[in-house]
Length: 125
Image (cartoon, rainbow, N blue to C red):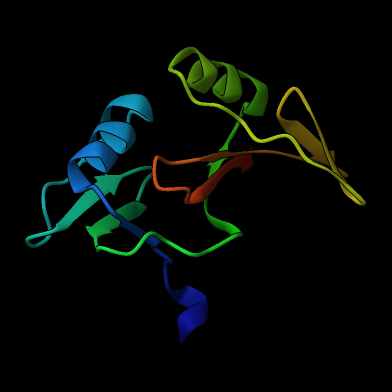
């Protein structure tokens, strides 16, 4: 049953207005309005959306919580850098970034954080 389901990330933030500015203006996602008080929804690709909600405690995830599949990782990274996004640099066994981008076999990926420290990625689709 779940194999046919879409997955939609739900992320917590401590400042909803600051997060709305980041996701809407910086990342350029289309607002789909507020789901309920303290919640906002952003559209990405066809059938994809991201929900953010406010809570008092900061998020605790130390892993990637959402990844945007893109056709051009390098171009997307540069576009986001031009908008002020700072990319993470990693030098771990099996994962090394160069100018923010890692190549893993045929895949490419780059990671950045939202204002609350949620780790997001862009990766080759």
